[in-house]
Length: 358
Image (cartoon, rainbow, N blue to C red; front, side, top):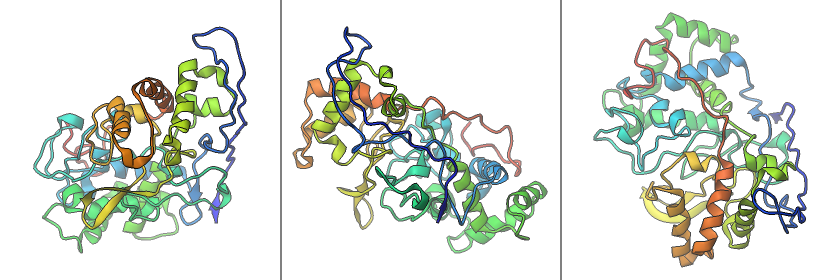
């Protein structure tokens, strides 16, 4: 079962009629979008096995920024999921252990074979139109859907030799090493005791739960798209409404639908993940702030990414140049104004906040 507090979709069937004039007005549109899209819930959904607490979220934020979780203690979750880049990293593929710098300027020998997706709004990954929120569980996660919940996703990179593990600690030992490192720091002992008062010792399970709790706070249901779906039709321009209609009519919404604009299903792709010749449909939330695009980061601009679908006949999507000029402004209504966060001044380990990102 899932504990849901004050979850309100506020969905209204939208029937737009002539408003007169042009410019910012909405004219000659009459549609009900509620079968295809819904706004994000106002509150994150926390599973019963990992209920929310402010102490747990605060601990998770510090762990997210602390490179103590990496084998060589030089990479943090935030190294590749930074608020300056929409909680992604602004790169085609990520530079993990041994890397130096932030975003497109980051360099190093160890690069992942795939693009780092944003961790924003992951509390709602997999959510579909009219899902029962009382029984919703987010997931699965990663491009190949290998992690069933956000708690497992939070721990996945710790065992990846390119992302965070490195070569100084083995995959079999890393979780125990992390527990020992955290247990040796008085501040972390206190923080874990506040977040998990029922436990006497720090565990890697608690690390995953704390980071997942923090990640569930990174959501925004106040985009112009959410407001539009909730009845504030005046926040869309005529071109944005045209772009929305074309997005549906030309076939984009067959895969990019629901509150997250993703069906979270695997789609055929180049086999960039070993033995996984498919990747999941990416969410389009906050898309204007998370370039580059596609699972391999191959498209540098949003327009480039849209044009790619015009070039692929196997997707049954029909997008022309004029369509792109309307669809792109619509997609930018999904950008989130409320996802920025201050970077912590320090982390309990005393290591560089965010790893070697300076």
